[in-house]
Amino acid sequence: VEELARCDGSLARTVASHNSLGVDRVLRFGADAQRARLLPPAARGEWLAAWALEEPGVDDPAALRARALRRGDGWVVDGVKRGVAQGSVGGFCVVFAVTDPSRGAEGVTAFAVEHGTPGMRVSRRVETLGMRACDTVELTFDECWVRDDARLGAVNAGLADAAEVLHRARVVTAALALGLGEGALDAAVAYARDR
Image 1 (cartoon, rainbow, N blue to C red):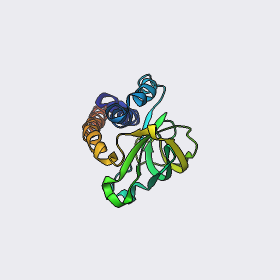
Image 2: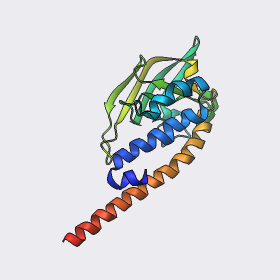
Image 3: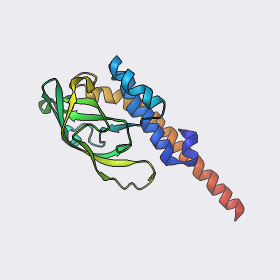
Image 4: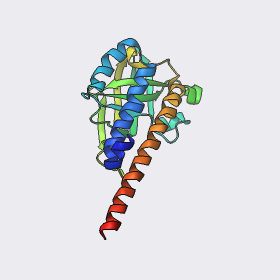
């Protein structure tokens, strides 16, 4: 990620979020069947993994703006997620939704929602200040039904599990920042010498 960021921050961000957020979440908390279904196309580069946690405000379930209610042998997800990297091109998205509002931050569950699932749609592209080539969108969930086997980890354990993934991802974010700085310094030195 550091080396990619020296030349292309958007590509580095795409690789970083794919690997350290989406794929790592499935690898650590997915069931065997989920790993067998989602990880091979992600490893081959056929799918990108998206991540829809929506920070800041991660400690406030109301800030998540998505709810999931049990229905039959699955869940109905409703709400909006903003700032989702790879949201329109990802093969699947790790979506965090409030499943028990009475439990506060402990009432959040994660789901792997595959691209093309009815009720999940891209509502708009999000214009970012930098790294504009990294696909960033707003996702809307409207009566989006997913089977219970789409759940990543235990019910109401989504944020606790996310903390472990985010701690590891922050190291990757630091590598991305370091690479951007190295690339900027290289460009500045080359420009100064040319001048």
